[in-house]
Image (cartoon, rainbow over all chains, first blue to last red):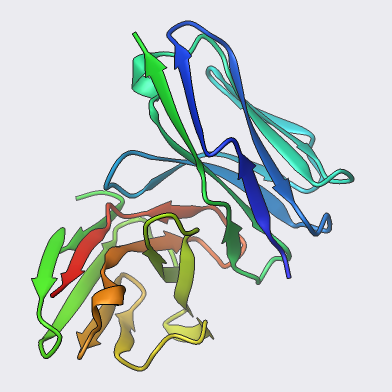
Length: 112
Length: 112
């Protein structure tokens, strides 16, 4: 059974710092991996989707990498801003028709 | 309205009440999902509908009853809930089962 772990559970950084959020999964034979952002009490916003054949995806200040063989993904946020404060969730899909399996998320606080 | 909308945004109900949550997607997608998000737990998939047919039912108690009358609308009918059912209920949609999911803002449910 696929399990997704995100470490750390919470992270606080000063504004302007570059940071990395980690996601690991137990079964490396995944179909794709998705990073989401969730603001308190709100729904999820999709940030990046990486297919199993890809190594990374970029969107603005965000870069997500995927290393299937080691069961890891990282989300890199450059030049962090207070507006980046949110919970970041990682989710993997094992095959085209299986549901997403989510981690518990990393709660990020960027201090001005 | 654009994206995925959910109503109501907040709901307080007693254990003997019957209520329904509504989700509507304006993205032309053909798959819709219900998730439950409890404090300090990963998102839990409850139900999946594809082309208005239920394709996933993750051992959800019968006090939760989904309905998908067409590809744009999804309901979650609630009756005789328990306090532990208090959570954020999120709806999502996607172009197909293996595609990126787009989430609504959620309904914060409190069972008293």
